[in-house]
Figure (tube, helix red, strand yellow):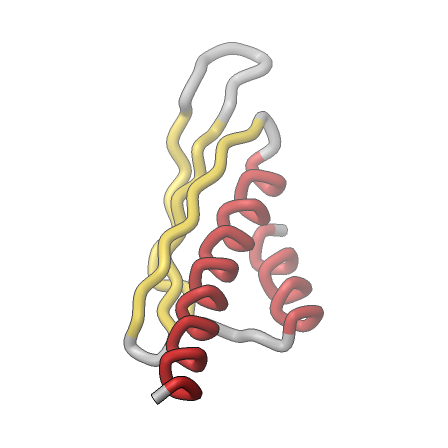
Length: 86
């Protein structure tokens, strides 16, 4: 299910970075336990990290992936701005 979510996000955004790390750790215990997802993606030699926690691991995974993608896009925008201004 997580892979399907990532592929759907890639299709919607037109992005396709390489997923280099995916980990899930329990933050709390019990029925309403939260899982913390940490992911790393790589794009053009740069690594970006995303983290999120939720009672639903798929939701946490999607949020973590989006965080990493947003970081990647912010770096791209800054680099393009630097290139345009020079």
